[in-house]
Amino acid sequence: MTAEPHAGAPFSVAVAARGADVVAAVTGEIDLVTAAELEQAVVGPAPGGRLVVDLRSVTFIDSSGIRLLMALDGRAAAEGWSFAVARAPDGHVERVFEMCRFGDRVLVVDDPANLPEP
Amino acid sequence: MSSPDGEPALDRTLPAVPGSVPRLRSAVAQFAAAAGLVEPELSEVKLAITEAITNAVIHAYEGREAPGTVGVTARLSGRRMHVTVHDEGRGMAPRLDSPGLGLGLPFIAQTADTFDLARGARGGTEVRMSFLLP
Image (cartoon, rainbow over all chains, first blue to last red):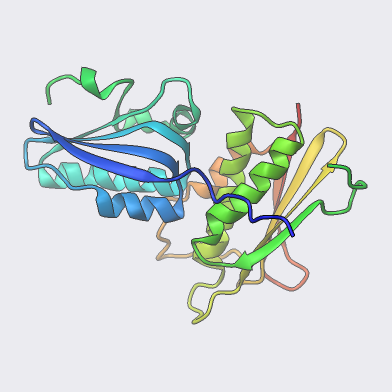
């Protein structure tokens, strides 16, 4: 009897306030299961603030993850805060962003520490 | 992986529930890695099969009280890996209340070398994909 293959890298979200920004740093794989966990964990900032979802430690993302990010972008517009996503410039997340031209809709940066003022 | 061509070298079926998505993805990823696939192509295989499995989980048994099953088979043929995701649900159908953005099939089209949709032998949907190996 072989062991059950591991069910993906451990998933975690660390949410921290940084001035008027809320930064949600995500680790692991984002799919149908973990996108729901991320949605639960993310807290929207106050109006005028900014939410940054940091995907630099995310090794996999699918359409469930893209759908959540687009929903957060919609919330930002409705609730009066701004939204940005950080990702490694040469990894899988960037490849998926390119496929669906995500950067045409949402501010995408290499490093959340170097964001412009909202 | 030393299986004769045509024999499924990976054949796994699980309940069509969200928790089966990472388990089946992991099983295919291990098979693909053993066949020699490396990044970035390995993650693109994972994306394609994740979209097919997620479609089965969300759509195939919509309106039913109990979920059915979703299964994955994979086999090697020359320098190509064939992966089929199958369910026994209602078949792919237009859905006015679809919860998604319609990104799943385009992601499959972007990442698989070939793919097609077929009605399964016992109803349901088969998503058949192939990927070139290095």
